[in-house]
Image 1 (cartoon, rainbow, N blue to C red):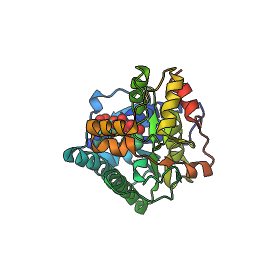
Image 2: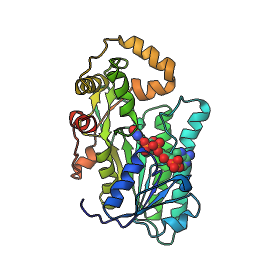
Image 3: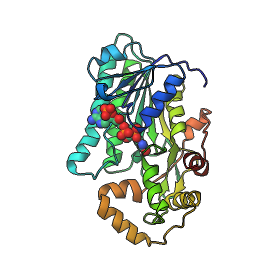
Image 4: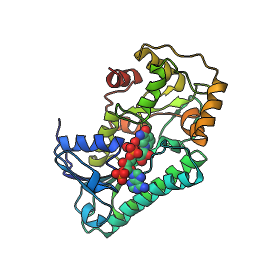
Length: 306
Ligand SMILES: NC(=O)c1ccc[n+]([C@@H]2O[C@H](COP(=O)([O-])OP(=O)(O)OC[C@H]3O[C@@H](n4cnc5c(N)ncnc54)[C@H](OP(=O)(O)O)[C@@H]3O)[C@@H](O)[C@H]2O)c1
C-alpha cells in the first residue's frame, strides 16, 4: 500500500457500507481514523481506528486533516413514507450542520470536508451523459441532495476546502445494491426493469474509497465530483452483463409489468431509484488525473463476482 499525506481523519457514518471499507483503507495507509457513530460502544474497528459519539465534536475535529461525512439514514432501506422522507433528509442535513458547527468552534480547523451526496441530484437526460455541470432535478431526492450539499458548503466560509462527491450505485460484495440485483438473476428470475433504457451509474467500492481519500488529501479537489465510473450503462445492459457473469438466462418480462410490480412493491422509491436514472460521468475527477481501477462494469463484476 502506498503512503498518504493524511495523518488524522474523522469519518462520520464510518460504520456503513462505504465507511467500513474507507476506514480499513485509511488505516492500512497509516492514517489515524476517528469514526463518528451513534453507537460507539457497539462498534469494532481495526487497530488505528477509534469509535466516538457525536458529543464533544469540536475537540474531536480540532487538528484533523480532513472530515469525510457519509452519515445518513439508508435511502433504499424501506418505503418512503412521509415520516421516512423526513428522516432521510434531516439525518443528512442535521449531521452535516453539526459537523460544520463544530468546525466553527474549532481553533485548529480541519483543512477539508469531503461530503457525500448522491447522483439523485440530477435530472436524467435520456442517454446523454450528465456531468458535474448539469442542473438538479425536481422532487424529493434532488431536494435532499441540494439541502445536504448547501449545509456542507457552509464550511467554505470557515476556510475549509469542501469537496462534494455525488455517489452513484456502489457495487460491493458485502451489501448495497449488488447482492439485491444478483439474487433474482441467480434464481433465473432476472429481467430488465421498466423500459431498461434508464441509466445505471455505478462505481466499484474500491474506486469510491480511493476517490474519497484523494478528495481528502488533494487540495485540487474542490467543489462537486461525480462518484461514478466512467462508463455508466443502461439498466438493461447492466442486467445482461450480470446474467452473463452468473451464466443465467434473463426472463423476457414486458417493461410495463416490471414497472407496475416495482411501483406496487416499493412506491415512490422504485420510480426514483430503479425506473429512472441518468448516465452520470466523472468528468472532474478524470480531468484531475484520477485513475479508475474498475472503469467498466465488466471489470467490476469480474472482481466482485469471481
Ligand atoms: N451505497 C450507495 O450505493 C450510495 C449511493 C449514493 C449515495 N450514497 C450515500 O453515501 C453515504 C454512505 O453510503 P453507505 O452505503 O455507506 O450508507 P450506510 O451503509 O447506510 O451507512 C450510513 C451511516 O450513516 C450513519 N447514520 C444513519 N442514520 C444516521 C443519523 N440519523 N444520524 C447520524 N448518522 C446516521 C450510520 O452510522 P451509525 O449507525 O453507526 O451512527 C450508518 O453507518 C450515505 O449518505 C449515502 O446516502 C450511497
